[in-house]
View 1 (tube, rainbow, N blue to C red):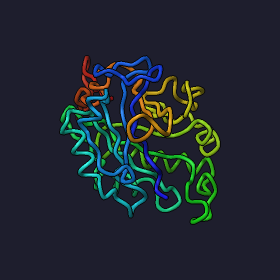
View 2 (view 1 turned 180 degrees about the horizontal axis):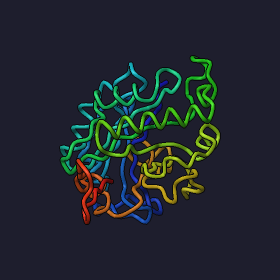
View 3 (view 1 turned 45 degrees about the vertical axis):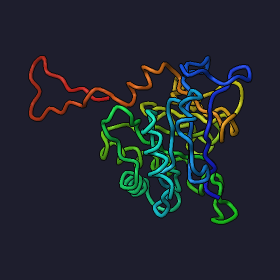
Length: 255
């Protein structure tokens, strides 16, 4: 199966979040894929959702057939949105999958509504089909190289750091608990009442997927901050590129 993505609203004490979307857990959001089907995005917004992750691609041969409708529909009702790529690290190198992702929906645009794209890297769900283990038969060193190649190419193409979606247990097992990706925002998957332990390299999570089923059509996601901070993540300061030798008092700044 393709990974069954989540469409979620955060619930507090069993109640729906009000339209302010400012819950104890942060800002409520959703994530969806082709499996979710058609979505009433106005209903998501009116229930308190403020952002949406939409699956765009997987490997180098799958594109969500509903991506355009889902991604565009989220933006049409004012939600901040992001595309995500489900990694298949055993099939091609990371750079090739980053290119496929960017070319098929994962490109970042400076419209104030688009978050950086997501690299979804997690337990191999196709063990029975591809015969690979949880880590796709890659060593921790090779997995770190694969993720580095993906995130490096994504940044080259978009000038934004890719968000990384993963679980702490998978990260420990399959990357050796690498500390090399702390500059990439973390979307932590852990179903429970608390985010719990984070993978090494991160001091906090940026997003949290807390359950696989929620009160609308899927599971639960939240942004670890305010709605204003969420908007800032979608609309960062422009990168400044300086050519030639640096002069006294000059500097370059990038996210």
